[in-house]
Structures are given as C-alpha cells and as structure tokens.
Image 1 (cartoon, rainbow, N blue to C red):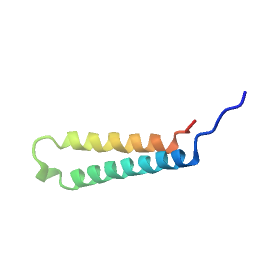
Image 2: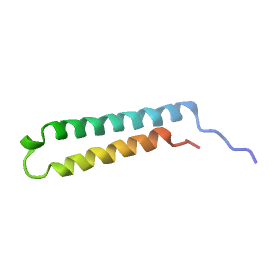
Image 3: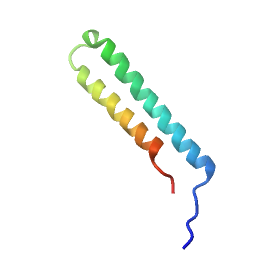
Length: 66
C-alpha cells in the first residue's frame, strides 16, 4: 500500500505555526513570571496558560504530518 505524503507547504506551515504558538507561550510565561507581584490576584492562570501554549507548540513542531 502506498501512502501519499502531505504537501511540503503544509508541513512547513504546521511547524511554523507551532513555533509561533510556542513563542507566544514563552512570552506570556516570562512576562508573568518577571512581574508576578504586579499582576495581582491570580498570576497562576497566566503561568499555566503559558505552559500549555509552550507544550502545544512543542507537540506541533515534533508531530509528523501525514
């Protein structure tokens, strides 16, 4: 059985979007962590959201497009 490979542009865009999602997560986590006293009541929400975005970006980068 032959498998049809995904188009090259689709693979590149998936990796690029994963990189941007990871970058946004890193920025959210960094800004929240460095200004944790100024944020107020619930900085943990933004820290967790940043970590989730970082994880999602990593998964998109290492995932294999079929």
